[in-house]
Image 1 (cartoon, rainbow, N blue to C red):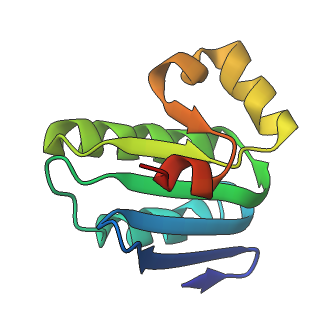
Image 2: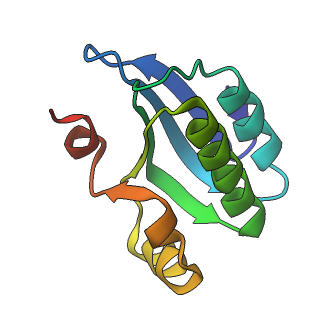
Length: 115
């Protein structure tokens, strides 16, 4: 799924985990595209969902709201959620806002998917 400045790709990992790769800018204009893509992701108890943000170049408060909404959905479904590949600037935002304590963060998608 592609918006003008955002690309979202979904794939299944051999472990059974779902992977969503997000690239580009996540803001008030592109966040509906990510929201729509995430609504189609099947969440099952115990099945991990990894959101790879290594290609994300910008994220505003609207984008953070989408990620928080996803966290709420995965919690309700008892499906572990891992955000991976956050760039330094986004990591700083997560630290300042306390989101680094809400989300499970990993340096890479590969690390998030490791047994």
